[in-house]
Image (cartoon, rainbow, N blue to C red; front, side, top):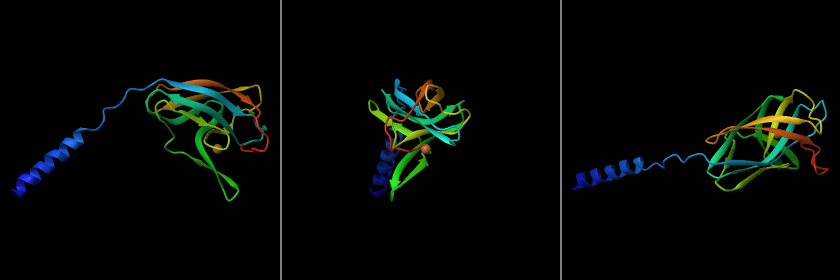
Length: 153
Ligand SMILES: [Cu+2]
C-alpha cells in the first residue's frame, strides 16, 4: 500500500515536469521616444533612454553600438543622496503589452567610452538585442536633457 502511494507520487511528479510551458513565440517590439543625452567631448560615458513595448513576454538582454567602446544596461538609484549605477546583468524584462521606460533617473543604456562626442543634433546607432524578438538597430538622436538638475551622464 505504501509502495503504491510512492509510485503514484512519483508519476505525478514526472507529469509535473513534463508540463513545462511551451516557449511562446516572439512578439512585436515597439521602440518609442529613443534619445541619447548630449555630453561634453570629455565625458567617459553617455546615457540613452527609450520606451519598449513588446506584444509577448520578452527581455532586452544587451545593446551593441558602433558609437562607443561598448554599451551596457544600467539601473540607477539614490542611496544616501548619492546616485549609484549598476549594470543589469539580466537586462530588462518586457512583460507582454507593458510599456517599459528607460528614463533619466532610472534604468538606462550607457555608452562606455563614446568614439565621438555626443553632440546635440548628431545621432547614435544602437542595436537592441532581445531574448526572443529580432534585434533592432536604431538611429537614436542626441539631444540636450529636457530638465536641468538631473546631472546623470
Ligand atoms: Cu549608467
